[in-house]
Image (tube, rainbow, N blue to C red; front, side, top):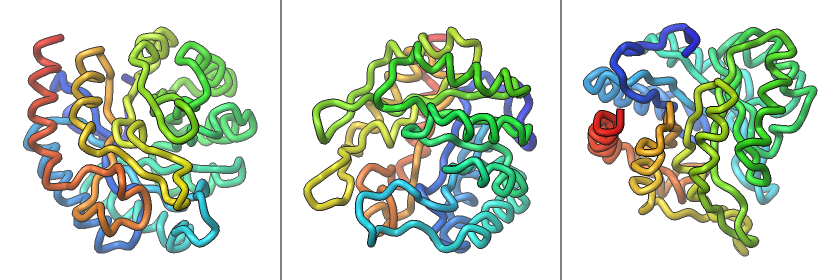
Length: 269
């Protein structure tokens, strides 16, 4: 894989991990999660990128939590990076956010619903940062080659693709593991977003549901299929998280899961 600043343990043979809270809720919470993730990933020699959204633009209801303020949250991401010597990733939603976010983080993430937005992809590419494009729930893995081309043709070869399931019916997602090799055929690293693929969107309450009991199942299958990386949102207390708590992994369960996944990786390598 191309070089990502501050990314450690890249010669370990392990998958890489994008992990952290769904949203930056505050500095204390972000630092607490990052400190624990640093200990776990150093111990297991897993390359790790800290994930946190500085703003949640895609919410079901107007009164849903969206963030603590863009600059405040981005500065927290920057502080995490500096304190734990780790690269960071965050979502951007409009083209004019790309340059702003790029001042604070190492990887710019394109949300799944926006993966076809040409102006957004081009703006992210032109920052020179790594661009992680989430596959739309409405697209096949093969169709993502066009999103990759947009970034490459804008002068940036540092692209990651992430699957997060496909829409199924009106309120559920399913994972088609054929998408992973199809996306790998583009020649870029491919990640399985384990936790978002277990969402149950568009619930009658206006709050997204989830099936966190299946996190281990999806993660194991992704590693067995050959995913280059995993994306896992985690929180000390998912039940009180301000965003996506219904499908996040409790932080105290992460280490044991990663240990199992490493053994699968070793078996299929």
